[in-house]
Length: 140
Image 1 (cartoon, rainbow, N blue to C red):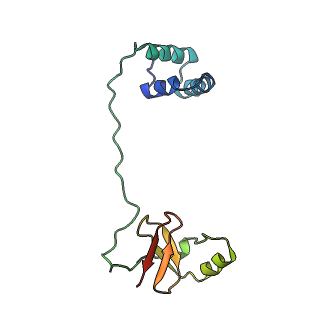
Image 2: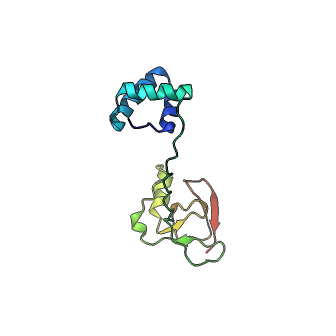
Image 3: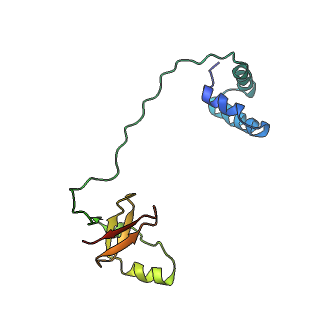
């Protein structure tokens, strides 16, 4: 009989009766165990009879950045994006928002959260990011 991971058993302990019944049913299909086997292992776990096994911990995948780092730019200048046609800049559905969106001809990256922002070519420009709500002013 295979052992159910302690994390899963701990989740069962914290559930209400109805939730636990549904979760055990799902786990029995996923693990290929009968409900009675799962219930017996849960009972052993609650009574403290189960000793944790030393299973090898899975290795974490390495994190890769989705953003390419560009050369250092002047302070106050935005970081421009290429291929602006790939982005949809529709933040504000109001009439004035649609008018501003029709003037968009450049795309930059928000310096706070790296969200793509569509802006007109007018400078200086103050931009409020819809993703992080931080305001930035660009002069170049």
